[in-house]
Length: 440
Image (cartoon, rainbow, N blue to C red; front, side, top):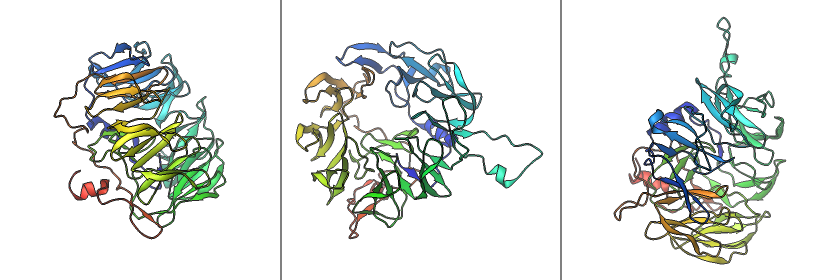
């Protein structure tokens, strides 16, 4: 997810917004195997939260009968004897969890191995986790310098000690040994010891993926940089002066950073018109003349622009959109599964969730054959051999997108221009939706 040179809403504010989001209907989730066998269903008082997939053998649940307190359930459908007002998914064997207003980290037994001491805490990535330290000021001593420490972020090791003395305004998780950090309105990259790989100088950036990170500045061309900060690829796109909000329009989810989702919103168009391109399996999707293709790490189109939209590769295949339908291509650009689906997801563990015209979800293999027949209201990616599905039937007149109820993004949407000044995003983009009152 992009890092913005503007501090995002506080974790507490985001939690408040989450509380407004409509919850999934209780009891509609089931866990299935890769053959479609139903292993177990969630109790009627319990629903899934977050990514709806297993990590370290556990996934996050919330209990309606326990004031919506959150906990974990394992692959056998048994609940971990632990609950909290807020937890993050397990990552690298640990999960951030709240207790008495402070965050720490628990192991898979539910025991705190890093005591609750932080104002907020996030998941571990590559042995580091970002936290918001709880600075306690001496009541007899007051200064602007000490007050300004409040709300800063730092990174910790797995033993709970600080990885360095660096405090930042915002940060990404680590990716390929580097984390993007925001300091005084500019973004740079640090290594795991807190040393700067690239000094703070950018307005916007993604994390590193396969050795490259996408950066952009208002009025300048987008480009990919390496870990020395050198430009590796310059793109023929220039952003305007509005801010960028990361939005997964394909699934109708408003996403502000890598860990926090503000729920679902109504989406008029089924695929986004621009997404920060990241390299996956050596290729990155990119738009040219309003069509999407794929570039290699020299910036050369190896799959010519020809699709309405294109997504990053996963397990050798990538989702593409042609004439409003979803299909898949291989790394040579050959269409291996014809665009025929209303929605489609990436392949994980050899299977991909797809939605048919009758609004039912199932799973296909890499030949495009249904391995699990389309019969679900929703289907989520496979992880650790299992996947979650929703059983609730879809009424014939039900909208395909979630109902619009409340959420308006806290940041406006970015536009992009080519180097000649032509706006390549059509008039009916998401920003136009606000102008035409489609969104509140």
